[in-house]
Image (cartoon, rainbow, N blue to C red; front, side, top):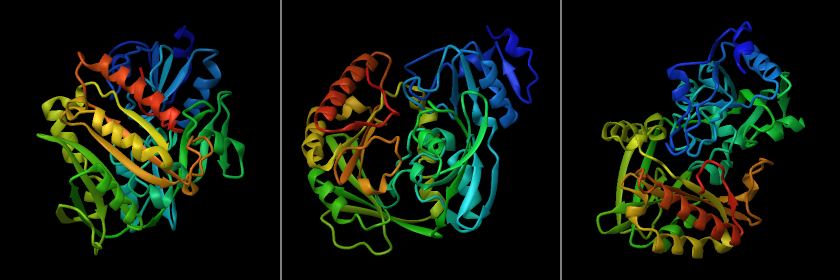
Length: 387
């Protein structure tokens, strides 16, 4: 079915056999495996339009860095590998235009030369711009700035008919594509809002005896630039850590504190060392049956207390953890991003590392927690896995 497409004139490469197909038949989840009929590595935005016009019913799925966890960027049709469309334009005051295949690490490197940063960065900077903008993009500053999709000024999009469009918040297409999971077209470039970046960051990791005490301080410290609650596996049970940044930290109720001063880039890219370590141990390549949701604040506390009571450190694995971010819903303005009907949405991520023998059990547990979250007024954040 792809022979006629292979004969078209491409600026990039249209691949119908070999290791390239095997590579995109996997993702960070290592759970779903779909081998495509072909892979297009576009050499230009025009290639994207050519493919969508000529596909003629063959499924086409765009792929950034392959960091999805349940086959979201896989297909038995054609994978559109966007990683080569990664140009980064100049910083122009409070904005920068970048192609969708660029990763956030490269974007931040470019903007910091001008003392600027995107307002919201995900914990892991190896994700592509197009990938996170297709789902939302949440981080430790979202309580001030919303999702990454809430900080986009303009988009370039190729619609399923192969036509290219430049759009802003005045256009319906802009709102359909942001957090639209690729349903309305392929995002090829975005103009991102920028804010001043500090040269250094005072990072504090505050340790608590209970999850409730951690959450109380996270609420009390919501005025700080960055806050993230981590529930980590320990030798004797869960460890409760609040990660914050502040030049001067007001009184809190933590039991212990670790503090350090980092460059802004090193703080933003703090998971790079962990990635290198888990690649060396092989855990990076283990299955990752992650589960994510937004909960209304009214039901979040009871839900989270039940979560850490019934879920054990062994359930998430030695490299797993649970993250929470309370985010005022007034900051979450992206139309396609489903959030609860509450003044505050609590983003919860259960980031499991499993083994092939425990994947089925983890997926079944994810389905249980999904059903409980929906019953509690929660909504799905679409990067995760639900059996």
